[in-house]
Amino acid sequence: ETAGDLVITEKFDALALMTINRPKALNALDQLTLQQLDAAVSAIEADPQIKVAIITGSGEKAFVAGGDIGVMQPLDPLGARRIAVDVQQLLNKIEYGSTVYIAAINGYALGGGCELALACDIRIAADSAQLGQPEVNLGIIPGWGGTQRLPRLVGSSMAKQLMFTGERISAARAAQIGLVSEVVPATGLLARARELAQIIAAKPKMALQLIKEAVNNGREMDMQRAFAYEADLFGLCFATADQKEGMLAFLEKRQPQWRDQ
Ligand code: CO8
Image 1 (tube, rainbow, N blue to C red):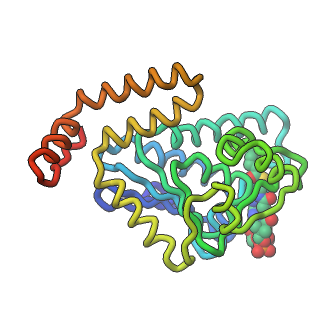
Image 2 (cartoon, rainbow, N blue to C red; image 1 turned 180 degrees about the vertical axis):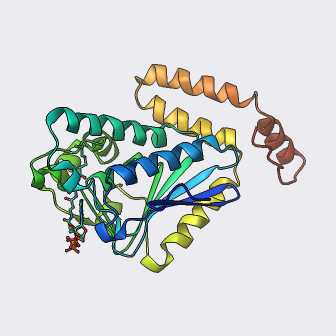
């Protein structure tokens, strides 16, 4: 199954592997690549069989080296604003989608590439990967959610340090600050991503979806509302077949047979 040659989607039962495939530009996102990424994410969200999607970059050097600087250079203010809004919407499809997204960061994740990874639910990185928000070096700021997602993930102070300096950090450092959750040898990155994806894909889909909703939407609420929201979603679990099955299987001392409903 292929959405286009700049973003390749392969499907393995409940898993999808999306590869951003523009290696000659270190997988920088130009208009066509963004269009294909958008189409690929929409196709994944529309496929009820897919529970987990891995996003990675082709080649050994880069995950995504950013937005395409050649495309951005001549933009006027409204054009730049348009691209920022459009890509924010694309990344929101990932963050607020019903699929679990894992970024497998195989090399440079810079600027818009780091922001793409930030929109995913989980980030794991090759030991050779480098991450950063170098926009300041181009006279701009992150525009694809970076000024908002990065501080929520690593704290304002660390986020501002990364954005003010534009410095690239190693995968090991990214793990220390919580920007990635695991670092693995480069040759084992995809295998580990698929292993994680498989573990998650073996879980009941509604519970996965409700965990994602509780975390992502709850973060935007004050604590009292967030607790009430969590309680509502907890209650909603009891409308699913898999809650009945999961608890019955435990009590009957057998493995559950998930129906993903
Ligand atoms: N855009 C376009 N082309 C790129 C990009 C990019 N972001 N990154 C790399 N390339 C191209 C290079 O131009 C080069 O092309 P060519 O072979 O035709 O000269 C090819 O990829 C290989 O790159 P290098 O020769 O530079 O490879 P090196 O190993 O020497 O360096 C680096 C690798 C360090 C990653 C270097 O390429 C680099 O610094 N790239 C730019 C990184 C960057 O600044 N990224 C942030 C871009 S800004 C952004 O993402 C903002 C998004 C929000 C925009 C809001 C809407 C307006």
